[in-house]
Image (cartoon, rainbow over all chains, first blue to last red; front, side):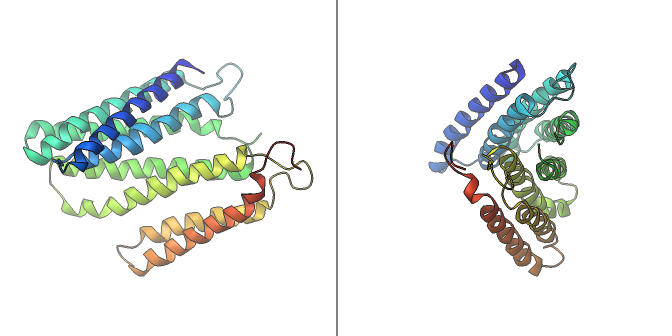
Length: 132
Length: 133
């Protein structure tokens, strides 16, 4: 299993653990803007990140020389996904409870980072989705 | 990877990018409330990412990976699964027009159910133990 896949999967596992812990807070009625963070840790941080890692590992090879196409793009995907997610995890509850310009800009950067993560993943994986 | 899986997976990639784009706009709107109509994108965001991306990707990869038959059509009644693909994507797109045509939500959901029933019928027998023909 390539290093990037291991990093994707292990980070995804941490996101799942964090989401489940956040679920405990939500069950106690402590919301404070945490619900969207909970959902996105599950759907983006865990499920999507796990899929990204497994696709990078197991989808058909791009070529003999570059089986996983551009590994650098893969690492950028990882960095953007997780930095974007981390920024929203901090700024979204902050914006919901004490809205301010700083957290608003963090949300904007988080939005751009998460979108770019998905876009780079698709760019790097598109040609690997091919008929045998 | 069979052609049908290529279609499923590539369609799921397109929905991933679109769903993330709409989500990004909504998140920016949470930061700077500039244009409240952006919240109308929320149903697209959820539909595209849950059904269009996650479910569709799983269907495409499962069609490729799960056990094949050693006799006859190796992946079973493939035509049924092609219809499933068509109904699923028609369902997603119809559901997405709910803002303008509220009744399309129900029609779209029905199309998605038909898609899933066709997929189950097309794949059921492939969920089998090793060695079974």
